[in-house]
Image 1 (cartoon, rainbow, N blue to C red):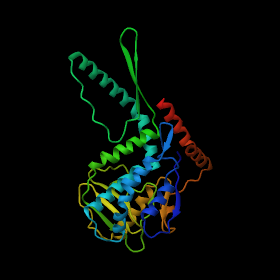
Image 2 (spheres, rainbow, N blue to C red):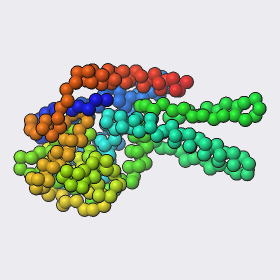
Image 3 (tube, helix red, strand yellow):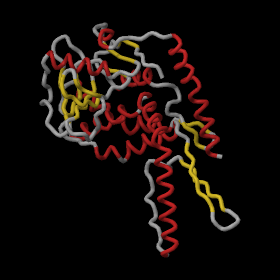
Image 4 (cartoon, rainbow, N blue to C red):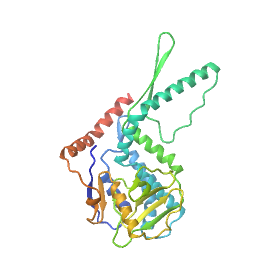
Amino acid sequence: MPSSSRFLLASEAIFSNTVWREFLRAGHHQHLYTRLIGQEETDEFERWLAQEFEHPATEAIRRAVNDERMTAEHWKALIRFTVAQDVRTPANLMDFLARQQETLPALMNETLENSVRDLEEAVRTGTRLPTPEPDPSGAFPVKVITEKNPNGDGTIRTEIVVGRSLWLWSLRHLLTETIKKVPDNRWTIVRAPGDISWPTTDQPVVKLRYMSADNYTYGGGWGVPKCDIFMPLSPKHLLHNFVGRRSWPRGTVLDVATAQQIRRIIIGHAHRYVFDKEESDVPLILLRRVSLADYQQEQATWKNWHREQSEAEMDFSR
């Protein structure tokens, strides 16, 4: 999809849970999390996100932006909320689908061949194969098809739709299993100095590999050493973790140069939208590219998204 961004103004002084919902609504698309169970549509996944990650973080965010004391449970809820905001975005969806299109066919073939070898060896030696542990994130959306030939042998093949259902399965797996490995210590909240404020974007969580002011990438990860992870909580409050090292003490007011650099990094990480409390330097940091053709193409893609995904899921379930 085309690379462009839109700059919106946010008049709220605090990114409360209500405001976060408005940001998320602007930053995602209708039916992004809808899926089919049988022939029925359900928004169960979005309700699960709200129940498990958004609602528990409400009090933690309130305390954070009011500089109040936070317990270990508040920090845990805030970190879980941050992980969810990192993975639930349209940008994450597009990256995921592109990555799976490239790597999944070879991985599925390798897994299937290894499984057949293990099965043949078990039959030959009379060994009982171990029973797989149940997956708490739900059934992996794959179809296994066996065909027996008249001569006694047969073939096995797997089919999978690289689309919404696979993405939602991966999110639930990450947010129930992988999230357990996210460090829950060394997190802090720092403040912007003077007239500088933190914007936020439709990719609100930044995972940064920082070498210098002119040499950094957004390719960091939750467990990658020396990775800066941060997310704005309000125009003045920034959640921060420096993986493997201690961050600033909570409540630290950053110097102007550091704050301006972080502001540029946040804006540069935007996918389509930047939200700021006032018109400022956003158009200078993130240049806008205007293309009616690209805009119309992207709008058409999202307009057809739900129908195409639903049809693929229905065909796959038959």
